[in-house]
Length: 361
Image 1 (cartoon, rainbow, N blue to C red):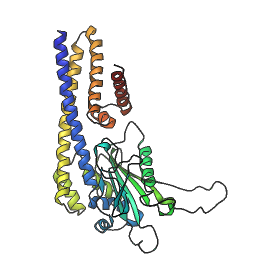
Image 2 (tube, helix red, strand yellow):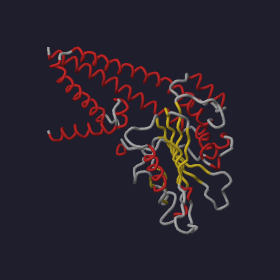
Image 3 (cartoon, one colour):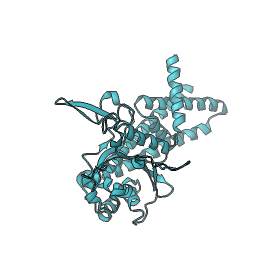
Image 4 (cartoon, rainbow, N blue to C red):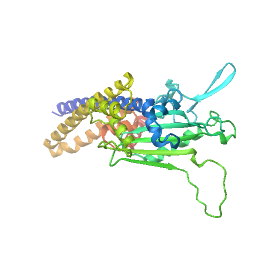
């Protein structure tokens, strides 16, 4: 009897693992599509118009030409010492963002999108001509840490990584202004906040030389419901339509191409379509996981009190095994927490405990 129950429990756990891994893979693909969409120059231009002073009031189509090269999407590591690459060519030392994707860098945290943009009307006047822009997408506010702290770390890395790439030795006056722009979905309301340095004179007033505008964080909150098209919520409506998991493909294309007159090139259309399909897949896999867990909960209620305590311990052990297996398969703690509906700190604790137990054995 116990052997039969154990086999059913094992089969259920294997089925749930398959559903969770499928859902997590779909979410990873969804995230990749979201980053590719946000990384389109036509979309980035709309973001720049609403967040960078020099571009305010400009036509986004005109702004596109100021974006230099191809934006780096999920390729540049955030970790200190790994953001930059130094190469040699014809005896010269060349530096730039590290976009290599070797095995040694697997599992590293990377900037979602990072690129350089030229500022209009500045060239030839001895003024700052380039700005470094980072755009990050978050499906909601994380539970394991406060998102503003992460944004501060990212914008600080954009500043510190410039040494020996954008300026050498002590030429700090050559530092470029940086923006870390965070697009956070599923918020209570549509918001936008600019977080930057300010100077407060506590005793006397001295004109300290330097640029207070070098460091900028912009937090964009997208409500679940799409706002009406208005000047105030122009960017929120565009980003909300792009990233929505409620709108159909036709509705998205009508807003993007019709209201905002963004050319629907094949790559953009393909990513919009992929996100719609992935949204459906994630929903179906989520239902399957919920049904499996609901069925298991129903069986639990029907068992005797003597088995209940042992079964609960078995389920907890099985859940810990599932989390450890996902960890060994390369999923991050944040991805596992999302897939298993657990707090990220609890996931990290369970991984540490299981790995500690294995090492002791």
